[in-house]
Image 1 (spheres, rainbow, N blue to C red):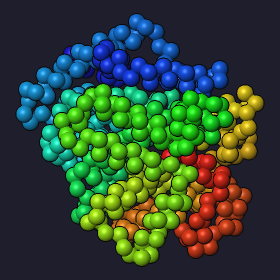
Image 2 (tube, helix red, strand yellow; image 1 turned 180 degrees about the vertical axis):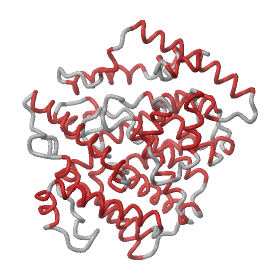
Image 3 (cartoon, helix red, strand yellow; image 1 turned 135 degrees about the vertical axis):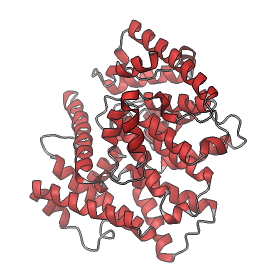
Image 4 (cartoon, one colour; image 1 turned 45 degrees about the vertical axis):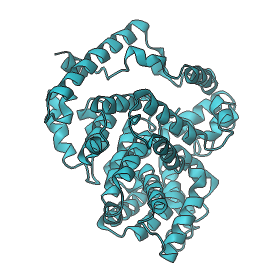
Length: 434
């Protein structure tokens, strides 16, 4: 069976031949930008594949598309996971039955889905919430869109890849199920929240905004050095929505694109204090009214911000893996900067930093203040569980690096309040983790 062969051989879905005509001008921009980012270093190794191999993948994609299209149209009660290899189908389905668990192991799920965790998890959630039926979405277009999204994440990035996007989407689902949100959010809000989580780091180059600015990358010029990555993630997501015409039948298509952008732009860590201060003021004055669309949207922004940097709040076995991956990405950027005699970005020097020191600073100045306020807003078992893991994980890293722990504790007093002005080093880290 072609479908089984494709998955077993490790070939993921590729876009159809006609899809390569999209956004020609954007493609030329991207090529210029990659040259600028690389500075002679191949940061996008997957782009160097041979032409025959690409043609083979496109052929598989076309055959797979035809097969899935026939199945989707011909089976009224079709299981959405029909695309999975049968050897893995049962295990992946079993995991999805517990997709709302905070202990959900996205790494295991990614292996069980043959590297397609973002596609299958997001499709499952859209289906579970009834959004596909409610908004009359074409299931083939939905899957095509999700495949393109997953494909536009860079798998060679240790951290900012499709698995991270899937992890953030799963976390977003957990927050959407919290009582205050579940009772107030509309189906449109939920659709936006899931799509924003899945696309929030789309086409991330694996380096941070200061790196793009100091190397004169075309994206920095295009967005005038302001929320460079976040603007690019948003515009990339809009490009895929328009290419697949996923929402072309909806009168609110423009509104979806704008609000999607508003959510993704909220993940810019340089605006962390702005959002946190506003959130804190709302909670102090007890004037958040989720009956108002603007307030619901703001809560969605805060939920996405939490989902984006929730790794330190996961169980140690998961949190430690994410910490190692994000630090590897930091140090890779630092190595590039060293090689080309650029100023080394904060936290990117492997000789001056450790995983423990990086994580302790990030938890202290960025994560703790945000999740302390989220717990005030949503005082639930999940919030207490996240804060509990955060405390235990910080203690574990502190035991590995007592010096870093001591320096971070000097500025602490009242939890969540004393760190209102995070250091530039912590913000720099956050800008990469988000």
